[in-house]
Length: 226
Image (cartoon, rainbow, N blue to C red):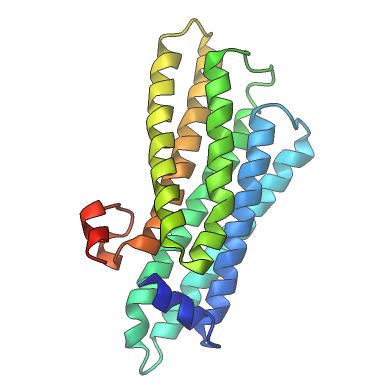
């Protein structure tokens, strides 16, 4: 499915403009996640940095609406019903990218009610490692998607699933810690948002290896048949 979609995107088809907008969404979401992490962990504390993330979130939302509008207009043209599966795929993918932008914004927002440095301990060390891995798989998403690289997509899905498990384990550790209520809330929210970002990367990568009706899932038995 994805290879056919990419072929349409690059063949001068009206859908090509949608592909460019989707690529722009991915770039913005990646930039927002990097900036959100800097703000959350206290490396960047200026109000301007948070404002920049919020502005990019608005841009991502506008791009999502433009793509949706173009999809509807495209499918209304006579003879375009054959593109329906690809348009459905695109509609799902843009929602995942939009949600990544939302969670990156959430990371930036946390600093508004917690300006003190995070504790330096095993839990925050683990969260920093999770952050690094999330940023790595997200940064590779655009290229994996563009090249329809199944092996890299499978690796990214595996990494994303592992990140989600680590985030769940981390939240249990937070609940058992001696943190103040504010510290526990902040760190747990950070883990939750990174889990959700990795979940949406998982969904996007599933489009590389799974048929449309199993989008967002990873079925090894299905892969063996393709």
